Length: 247
Image 1: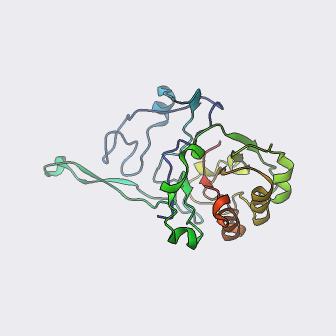
Image 2: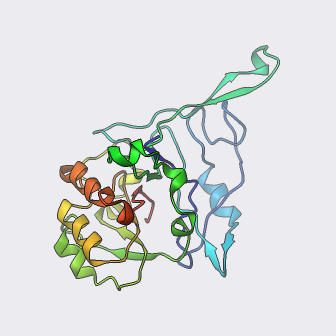
C-alpha cells in the first residue's frame, strides 16, 4: 500500500500533556466507539479525563493522532471519510457472534506517506511503510510556527532558521488557526509545501521527518512536484507525514 496511518507514535516528546483514553460510551459498531458506524476514537470527555501517557527513553510520548470519524475531512472539496466501522453481524439480530467490519483508505486522517507513494521506483522495490526506520519516527521533535501569509516556500523555510542536526520537525501553519482538521469536509485551500520549499528543506537541512497539520504535506498547486522532491533520492527520502494534528 502506498500510504498508511501511523498508530502514531511520532510523537512529540516533551511538548504538552497527552490525552489518551480508554473506550467509553458506545455504539452499534462496538461499545468502545463514540457514535454509530463512524469512528475508531473515543469521546472527547473520556479522552480528557484519562490522561494516560506512554514513555519513550526519558521523555513522554504524546499521541497527536486524529481519531477516525465519519465527518473527518477527506481529500476533495467538502468530502468526508464516511463510516469507518460497522457491525456486520450481530447476536442481537440472531447471529451466533458479533463481527465488526473496518473499511477505510490507507491515505486518510493521520498517516505516513510511504516512500513509494509518488515514486514508482520505490514502489516497485517494495519500499512500503514497514521499511521506514522506527527510530526516525520516534523521538524529540521540533515544533515550528510558519509564516501565516504563505505556503511553505523556500523563503519561508529559510526564515525559520531551523538548526542543523534537527531531524524531526512539525510545521504548524494557518491550517491550525483555521481548524481545518475539525471542519466537516475537505478544503483544498490548505497550506503546504511548494516545490521550492521542499527542495530548500532537502538541500539545506538535516530534516528526515516532516509533519504538517492537514491532509497533505504538499500545497494543492504543488501536490505532485513537492512530493517528488521529498522522495526523489533514495538515501535522502523523507518519510513525510501528510497530516498530523499540531493544533
